[in-house]
Length: 203
Ligand SMILES: [Zn+2]
Image (cartoon, rainbow, N blue to C red; front, side, top):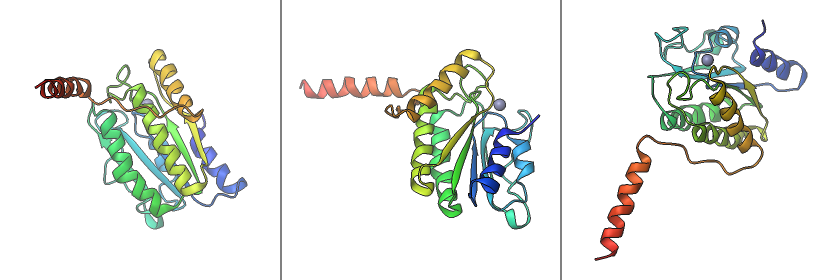
């Protein structure tokens, strides 16, 4: 068995002239193997957002930050079940973006699992959410490393959400409009806002 994203990171450094590699893992499970491999490697930053322990494999606590010279280049964001698109995007905006600005990656690799989808392991991410995350990653790559961005397919057990989630990512990479993420209850709030606006306007 090979850890594809770790092999890709090592290849980028040894053969492609990339000094610093950022790995972003949005799979529902904590990427414990990737974390172990780069635990003491300061030139590979590992950002992992996942469903919190005791969910399998039970690792990925906030306090797991790397060791030695690499202290701070492992970043874990454990989320409760059902967190949703907005929680993912907020973590990307408020934690990943400043970390990337500090680290200045030469390339970004994404461990793209589709088990955060609500069909699968209940982190409640939607297809629009995966598209929005992809748009965010594109911006980050443009900002820091000339758009060098690679997606590696990771988990996903429900074949329907695996297929549609992959499609949502590819659609954004192919240049389609970045979708607006699905926020719990947002449709209801919008309907209420529209209702009230109509009522005021008709007075
Ligand atoms: Zn997974």
